[in-house]
Length: 270
Image (cartoon, rainbow, N blue to C red; front, side, top):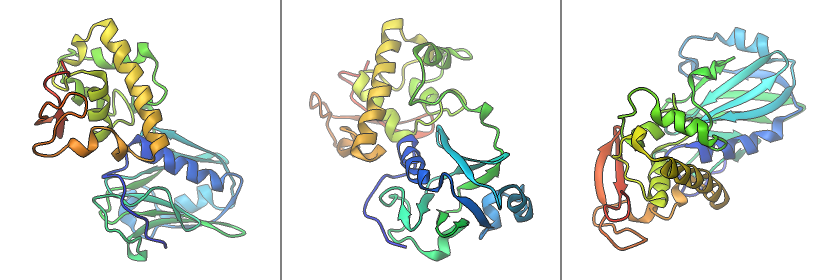
């Protein structure tokens, strides 16, 4: 395997969408082999024999994504792949993204956890040093909220107001049960662009603020996809002690919000 260059800290929506685009290469191919290299990847829930019975001999009909979940539809079954912190998708020897910050630079065979082989040639591989990714047969994605890349304003409003609506705004954005796909970097970038404090009560936004948040959520995802990763946001270089807001020069605040290290500008994010 080729070792890619520097890349995103963890796979967020943007990275998994890049995986989806790469995985389009296998659409129409017939599966000839399933190799669960590390049983940990299935958490013991799906025996290799069951995976083989459901997949081998069938063609991949479509590749989809819901949030951070990658879905391969074959005849009569769906294979789901989740990538955790260090999971990389490799198809025909091509890595889906530049290397992940929390993973080693090299793509080594010892960290291959799962492999699909196709006829007449080619393979799809899950490479994951930390063993946090997993593979599922016919995953139930109903527990996930709407996909952040296509969420509608009314859906976003419902996600923000669910429950008491008192959850911090960032915590609600990264809660996959309410909105699927947003991770730590994407949330900080979106809120910085939208001028909203991550500590605001999610259900306390005005209709105009929700519309602004929706516009920047969709626009930020499009921009980072074009740039090549969730780590390419305008705020990224300033997310460090002493870092200053790229917009107005104010020193950034840092705190844990929703259990994640969060950076924001106290001047223009209200």
